Image 1 (cartoon, rainbow, N blue to C red):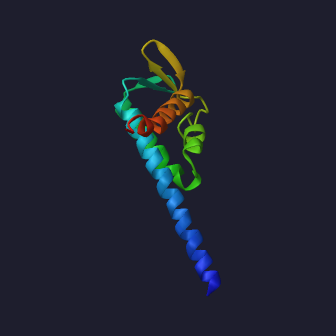
Image 2 (cartoon, rainbow, N blue to C red; image 1 turned 45 degrees about the horizontal axis):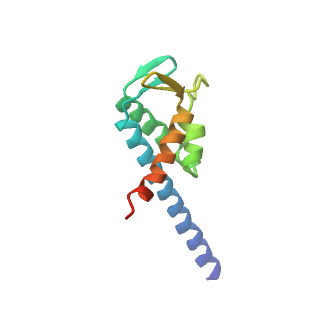
Image 3 (cartoon, rainbow, N blue to C red; image 1 turned 90 degrees about the vertical axis):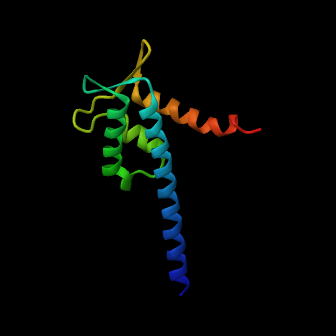
Length: 118
């Protein structure tokens, strides 16, 4: 009986972690979609909406292997699984890797609730 309780606790805790990562990824993808930047994948430019859809597809395939947002950014959202080439993002006149850009977006999202506090 005690072992069953432990298993249930571990299972429920795992679901909480998964739900948290899902929320984090959803937030990051919404930021991608609302961005004015151009997403460059394997040399081709994509709109923010197209980039967000691509990230949703990659998330659908990888979510069972992703245990936090950093893994999503570094392993899923930053490079092509087929070519191995890093994704790039062009904002204004600056071109940076999507890993740098997404990390920055995530940091902004983490600061946002603090800046709105009274």
